[in-house]
Image (tube, rainbow, N blue to C red):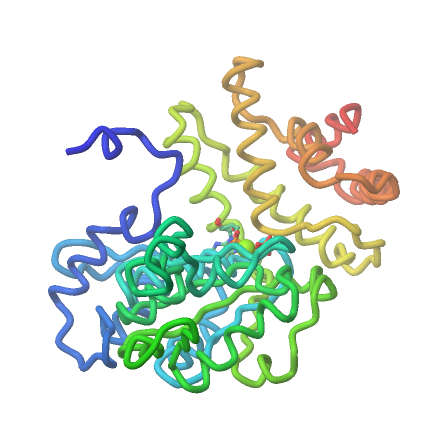
Length: 368
Ligand SMILES: Nc1ncnc2c1ncn2[C@@H]1O[C@H](COP(=O)(O)OP(=O)(O)OP(=O)(O)O)[C@@H](O)[C@H]1O
Ligand SMILES: [Mg+2]
């Protein structure tokens, strides 16, 4: 084992984190697989949506994406075809997570990835040049430095393109010929080396955040080559509570924090998030927050409250400490959001203050 492998990583890529699950699924998989796929489409779905408590090779496959079942199924089907897949939606709706899980299950690796940004140039996507070699010998295969697109095509893997709309339109457009013709042209080279052919298993998964849609337009030529799937925030309270509880407890255990968040506090947190997100509470209309009230933020608030209790307060997480952390995680740079939360608290005070856990929650108002 190398020194590098001994380092305890803060976060492992999905193919390493779920190595055991992927292994048993592969061993048990007898269904047909599309060319270049490591698992059959049915097993990819089981990997992402879980095995419902059923054991496969002695292992229960955990559910990794909650809700959005149809999106998951359609995404798997899209990736078998000739169109790329683009996952769009509000921030924190698990677009990146789903793209990583799909790549890990289908290709066995999720790391052929480009992170979109205003400064990304085509060379970081397709291929670049080793300039010392280029000057010494001229353009040739030895001087070529393959990028994630080149590698994914020649290895028959999925390439992930995170936040694609943050890249300038003309940079995004370098994908157009690749998705339609499945050939990457290298005009600097000659003969057979001038065209890189993709092998089965190659396709693209992009993600784009709807709030950032206007950053760089996507050309209609490129849009036509992608199938769009929208990831929705979880509206089912029980499902969101289950997800937040599991994720927070997993993160706390991984960080050696010896406490968990009580179910009643967790249920309250998810209720607060759902009500502030939708602007509706028990039939009353409220003003929704401008800030993102995603599941990812709910996980962060609960985790911060637990870490605070463990390291600073030496006390279990109480409902009152949620407001302390809501203020840093959710109310970011919009002071009107603080007013909206106060307005919401007034509603809670009139309707729910007789319930002990809500009464405790209200005590945290001093932190806002
Ligand atoms: N439906 C869901 N199923 C499982 N996990 C979810 C779901 N929604 C949110 N999460 C949690 O939220 C976290 C953040 O998700 P992720 O980073 O993939 O979101 P995103 O949609 O890519 O956001 P952004 O647009 O900000 O990049 C996930 O790691 C997961 O813990
Ligand atoms: Mg993302």
